[in-house]
Image 1 (cartoon, helix red, strand yellow):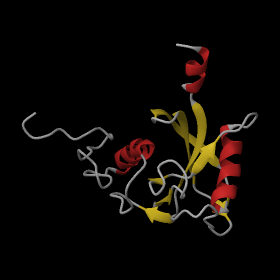
Image 2 (cartoon, rainbow, N blue to C red; image 1 turned 90 degrees about the horizontal axis):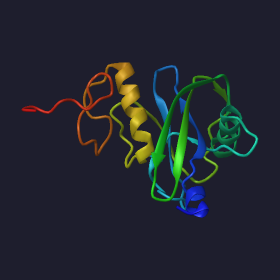
Image 3 (cartoon, rainbow, N blue to C red; image 1 turned 180 degrees about the horizontal axis):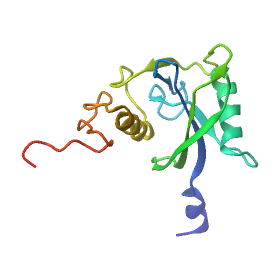
Image 4 (cartoon, one colour; image 1 turned 60 degrees about the vertical axis):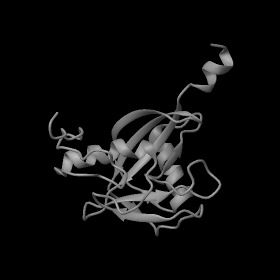
Length: 163
């Protein structure tokens, strides 16, 4: 592998906000027109810039993209995801407090969701989070449209009959 190929596959650090409201719903936004996977639904966030922590990046990205100032950030899970266009390290953080009115500043849409999702299609990197939320909430069944297998408590695929 050449240095250029190695550099191309270094993970891009991404800060991702899992905003959860008082009713336990979580915020999804659609990818804006003109971006890779435009129209797919995801948790909001963006790239961690040089010199930023994940929390700093998340605060900046949510202010820039959806117009809110977030309160305490709870680091939650980290997932490495290999998309055809980039290898990304998704740093998922829970956020339960914010101020300001939601304003979709990049032409995206927003939806407060619960399981199973109504919004579709879902960005592949979002799918693990749905499984984690399902496990925490004791949700059994599909988490979103296009789920191949229902999930069992624990976020693992439910065993199929006859296996």
